Length: 352
Image (tube, rainbow, N blue to C red; front, side, top):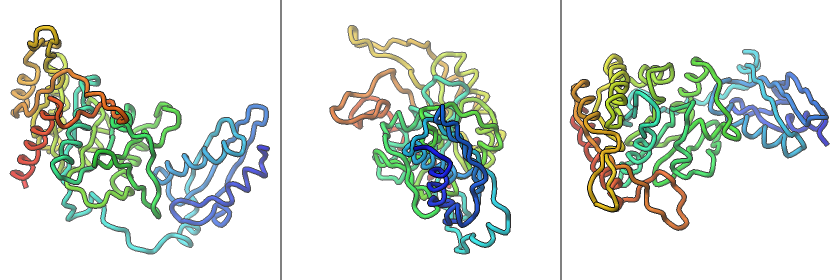
């Protein structure tokens, strides 16, 4: 039965994800409210470090555990423990280097677009898979925090796990993946404001056990908002690919994202023109559904080149394999992505 006592007993056994002490030890349980008629539980906890990936993992575990003892809906709030409690229990072990540490050999590649709906995430996912197929160690951060879609596109059905105070990313097709989508229940909308999102994004770099990576790809939100700017400022050494369709309007809007990259000293490796054409099954000829010339015009404006043109096609259907947006290696688009990956590797080597 759902009672304050049962909730308290549950929380007493759970541990602060940063200090690794139980909430009973840290005296971190600040408030419990129960509406028995509606099955709603509201909990406020004080933890060692707020707005981190570990907090998101804790939220997920708390919701699951509270529902197992009878809660229908769960409300969670977090505050930070007093400094004296943190100092008492804080781990003293030196932190391991992160992807952003000086001396990191990981190459960063941001995938950007001016607007949604042009296939930016599809390009991110398939470029990452192609780089992995060429023998690289690859990771993806789904930084499109309001419109996260990478886990679904890659057919990921599991969630990251905790290893000590680090989160272990999910791996599929040889690519390690981290996304806000792993920490949102029932596809709920994300209504956080910029500063909190920035902290969450930083935790994806610093608090995830990536291991050694050759390439880390970032699927940026479309446009030039706060999250995209945070990424640009966080990784000044990142290179960038701008995605557009052949439509003139899409290319015109994408120019803003390209200009933002230039203004923040991100080198643009090139333009990918997605949905460039459709091959008619009846005639075998290319049909330019969204017009022509958008990618070339954008490349001209940004003083770069078109490094890939992808046709409008679905991946092959494979029995027993769920990955709605990943093209097979022998698929025409799969071959195009391998060529794109080779161009990226060459460009990255030339700019080292």
